Length: 379
Image 1 (cartoon, rainbow, N blue to C red):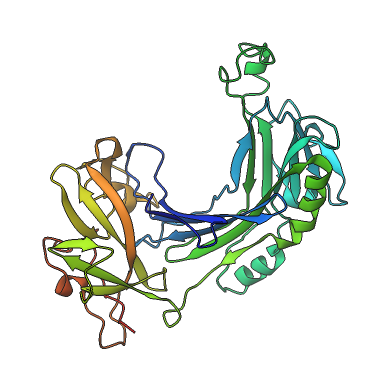
Image 2 (cartoon, rainbow, N blue to C red):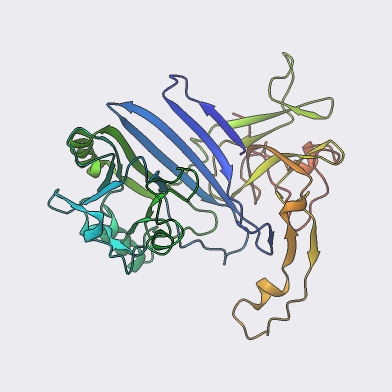
């Protein structure tokens, strides 16, 4: 977690997280930032908005499997599931997914763009609907790709919706699930939307979906009305319109609220503008030293590896230069994102290299992973 705060009106909560590789021992360095906002817009509607940014310095680190929204419901609380059809009627989930392939997928275009989970089959039963849309921009995005223009969606999205570990464990060790303690088995219905997006280095994509909390019939009606409001796409932040964030140093420490009259040591961009890279504040928990760096793995133990991948392998360079990282042995406190610096010198005269404006005990000597970036010129 690199940032989190409520909005001024207290109706939304925003967070910024670094997306970790799930294996604690890995050769893969994660270059993904997730911005998320959860907003209560009334009438039981919860808006979910994401921006995902790929800050990899390698051209070949392309992400082509995004499964968000991903989540689910407690099976003992909301056991009745239905999925909408294009004609806006509902059919039981079992009509889409058979017991032989409960974890299969169905095209979003074969649905009405939402699903609903309910406590019972009554019209007034407590329910939760998820609105995921019907690939609103698919043809437009595919046309962009064909013309060689920037695009984010290469194929149709898919829906996966199933009771975890059904039927295998429900026919054996969990066959008494209706009477056993609710916390003694997985007890989870998984809902997963796979939008088939592609995220290349230096790009950001955004996505919006909705949850609806209400009685069954009302939730169903509201969910149907929100399908056209589902949206997504590439997003680019211009340098001219992006705010600058000051970085203050007091007694060689980064501070958010400096004494009056303190001049910023430098400025960074508030958003991932083109040609930028994120800059982080981190602490070595073994020594208490704080540094400013672009390398989130600075205080993660690593070791060289000899994988011996043949040169003719298309990814031999990636694997043969990889290091093994032990995230479970890290001695780092990832404090916050400070902003974004530029990888190349901009036209603005007031832009300076971070190594020239920050002391070496705060900004270590640059190397292949700790990059020396250009600051944003103050406005």
